[in-house]
Length: 210
Image (cartoon, rainbow, N blue to C red):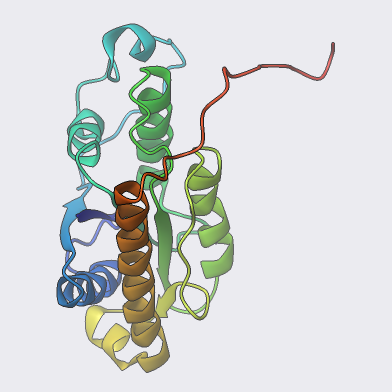
């Protein structure tokens, strides 16, 4: 089993990464593999709403989004991390996830369906809960169980060293990791016992004028 950890910070080795490293360490102790996927600093174009992904099986824009989808398809759980920018997730992770989740769903691959997801946020002071609310919506629209810790999944500090001093935040990263590992093991046990995921219905689309 493997969990994909996404670093949506412009700083590759900053606060968000330090929190993800703590999660990765704990997952390893629980016998779960993980990988940190760094989005990077190259520009990520927003979704064009062209619908080409439904025919191509991937996004028509060939960049890190398609690379991520290919990696994510082979993983069993996901933890998405972002620092707080203006009381929300970073601009780059927002356009990145918009395209990744949309292309995965429209292409019919449904790689996130029924797989557990979780979000973490890092900040100097505030804006973390709105960031978590924003990121969790990618999971809820994709029929993904959300894994929690014992508090909101956040760490505080202006650099990685200060994050290490956030004892409660770092403890929560470890609790989150253990909860993720437990959920994955429960899913594996259920599959072995013949308990299958819920059947899907064909999607019904409506709008608010008819």
